[in-house]
Image (cartoon, rainbow, N blue to C red; front, side, top):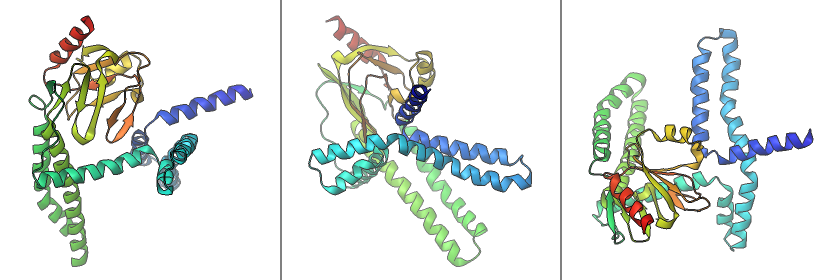
Length: 306
């Protein structure tokens, strides 16, 4: 009985360790939204108690994740100590990697905005065959829609502030809040655009596939680590379900478009990719969007034939 209980707890611990913090946050939001919907059908006497429980449910998820990841946090802290890292770096090692990656991503976006203002150019890409992802993709369209939506929203924000505020001071506060939110969003949009529009493609060299999607993702895949390169005609989630791959094992690198290529790696290959400034290894499938996926497929097949 004790061994069965221990194995069950290890299973749940390992499962929680594999779930990304971002996904866990999404689960918490879904719990709250579904709970609010359920509360509409409850008697008034039950609603207050139910809402209190509802607000604690995401905290329980976070606490469970913290406890499951505690051994990993201790291991990262010991590794930082062994490297001779300073105390601030050791303390940062205890934090969730996703949190640190978000801070790095934000800093990178601000740097991209500064480079856009100063009209700087990205470093030259590696020598090889370019594999574009912007010519036939929807990135430019999506960015245009975001810009239009942001500026169309300004009069609506002014109207909302004048309706819900009860004093001139509150109106000024709301205008300031809306302005800061819009400015912060603009930083991310322009920063990301500088990186993506400046690179515009991945690169296939004689020995590797160099992935580069700006600040959102980059990495190098040795060609001898690629077992197969297949065209994708269905949503990536449907492909994963059909091939029995868990969602945490996959890596996806697209501007905004649905992936149309899937790379299957050799078993045991630990290919490191950085997605949203978080480096992840493994041999799980990698999903890409390319303007001309057949170029990559033909070159991978030709490399395997040699």
